[in-house]
Image (cartoon, rainbow, N blue to C red):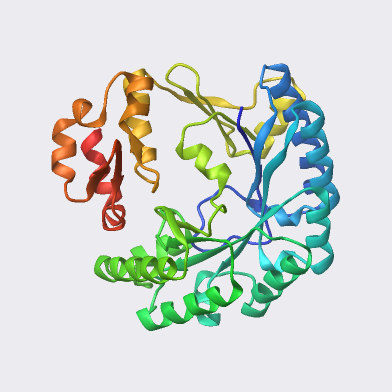
Length: 376
């Protein structure tokens, strides 16, 4: 097992665009949940999951609602039962309004060495539009406190293609982000997910999102500015300084095995074609399964070798690393053009090849959802 994902499904309130599993936070529920996570860890070890782990990722929800002592307790349990390699990447997602100078120092001392702060934007009006519970100053404080706490691997989120956003406004946002000098940026275009508050407003015409043409212009503007400032555009939505790519997320895109703990968490076992598991988005189900000694996760899909090849292509072309014909031949006995000659031909010129590696261009990434269908 390469990575460990821990889902913390608690938030102070639901943002209007969010469709991730989360529930309102209560201090007693948080502490009880930590006990369930430890029980889940023990159960997984009993079922044969083995370490040591190279990456750990606390995601949510809002993991920074857990006090540092809880994170420390969980990391100690993980190290004791699975083992954590000395150079492990340990990430905690944090929302600005939930952290303090003291809590960030506590996370750093517990072993967290990578902090991901959900800024989303440094525009007050756009923060309000997104329904975010923090202010611009909260965000700036969180970044400054994280640096003072000793975090030298800082990631920040940026959302773009927001209602009413102009390209000059996005550029101003980016310039402010660059002044913070993060090692990593995740840049997501806003989407109106079904069932969310934002989605309902878009359906009713109460909120209008930028056109596809504007989205493309914003995406390429971000690419041009960040790469000009030394960031590597290493995945569709992610940029990093040298040696600061998110190793945990790269594990997903490279189909390495990882264990997911917590309600709403996913796991992947890379044996034969591979198998993906998910814990249902239900805290009561999660609690009852663990208290009665049952497997809390259900199998979502098992892959044939052909399906594993398709997913390897699907995930690999998301990244600047791309796909290696040599590696495909070692795993599946074929190269990309031999397995999918029609798809490869139809994707030119967005799909390019250098040496034995295939890549999608940044403009190809803009059309990723459409282009990738050629392999299905």
